[in-house]
Length: 233
Image (cartoon, rainbow, N blue to C red; front, side, top):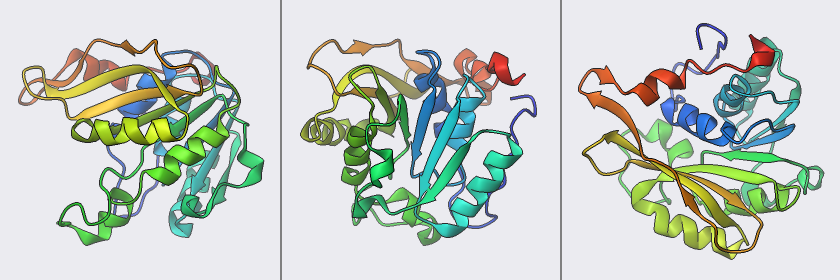
């Protein structure tokens, strides 16, 4: 964002990638969100990316890894973003203080169930492999009402599993976009907005592409890091 956001992350292990920014952009198209929750926040890249795109009054980040949580606190402080970081494992339930408290929940969950693949880099596997269920459950509990929304990013090839899990927790897809590496290739990711609402009314937005051709970013990619919140520029 032209130097607006600076993040500290670990030299080794899992490092955040552009998927967090695609989700932040997708989630903030609907306008301002006063109270935002980032589940499995890591170093806070997703929530802080969203804060560069729209005004966030208070950002709450939940992360189970103490080292990542410490970095998340540092990053929130550097960005002058009001909020807090909670160290908590969502598999053990959700802190009561987070129940029905948020306008927007941001989630970049593990992309693979444990044992689903052979890990090429085991040091990154904690962030990449794990159960989707705790994140769906926590998001459903955290939403403040039928107009509150939860935005997820998940592999396109596994969206059937994602939608089935969302239904079990009373979450209904209301908006979705598919992200393609190139316009003529199959989708890589699904960006999905869920709500606790009546079924139906899903809006499928125009497809997104990351690259026009090898080495040439798409117009969508170019706009991605150019967005800035008026309140923070």
